[in-house]
Length: 262
Image 1 (spheres, rainbow, N blue to C red):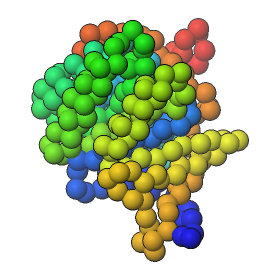
Image 2 (cartoon, one colour):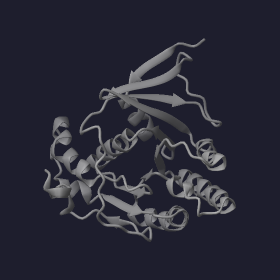
Image 3 (cartoon, rainbow, N blue to C red):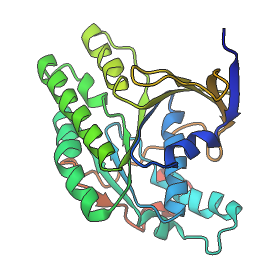
Image 4 (cartoon, helix red, strand yellow):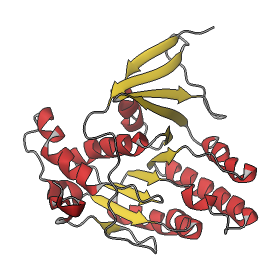
């Protein structure tokens, strides 16, 4: 039996941004998947890379990115540390509240927007969350997911890298429980995320497309600590673009937290 290899958490970020461009990655597990994704986004923004984020589960935390600009960025001794406003100017966000909005955003609006904005990275929070709504007929949900999967692969061929962040759920519907494995089979890499006492453990899972192996043939386990922020996820409820319109994060948004907390 192959031994388990432990490698730094930064390896995941390096793999995602390494050449060639155009990758389909997924993080799934607890709520820390959203913070890890925003942490990756923060580093890309720090290097001047515009990021497009589609939020299907209302987990985008503008305050985390603002705090990242104020604190984490300074640790890397960049010649000019960006302000939170400058960092957020490179971030574009759309929210989808139904599975139909999610499909339209990914298959129709996103490709047009990416050509205009030249954003090479897309992050999608909770792609399947709206598909778990029992009001959406299952035959429509399956067909929609198939069209979305095809659109993601077109983005990959266009050298766009996509990172999905998904919260693990156990549904009553056996059919809807099968949606997640179907989506994961289309990914290049899938990583499960667990957290215990502030330590994040990331396990690379084999998919139908690719096995997870290190250079010595052992399975990969990535282990690291949450780099910044609390364990809980702050939910930013402002700027609701219910029609899936991609908008810039307003520069004034990160000044205060909800309820006056700083």
